[in-house]
Image: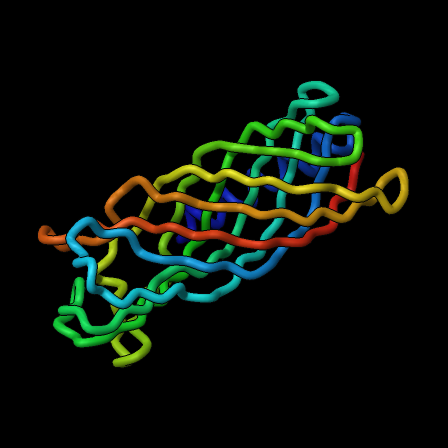
Length: 205
């Protein structure tokens, strides 16, 4: 955890320091609602799966390579998981369960600003660090049953609306698609899938 905190401070410090000397930077805060599920090829078609509704929030920095392309880095706290019933539990032998997984994720994306009206599209990989894992319906701490890290891809589509020369609001739709197994169980292959709706405030330098 100490190494993770040090890395977070380092990344944010780089953006802050460079923003003082380079006019191609943006720094901002954002947050919103997140809908998530767990993907598992072993789930039967009769499984009753419901999206887990959670949060996501964090900070972002973007360095502009040109007027239309940028490198965007985000530091996000995000809630993922799943709700299921009528199924023999993936990790626990439960008839119904509610996995609440809290991650700290770092997406690094190429951002394409393709419109003078503020529209943008971005895509890139992310790494996630598991902060906590709980099976809330039966009140079980499940962290020992999940891997500490996950990897995947983040893709987003949104629009920025300028309030003045320095400040703009953003609204976006964003998905994180996990590509690695998050379960320590040999009999399952779980990965995260989430869709979020965010708003934020961005400051340009």
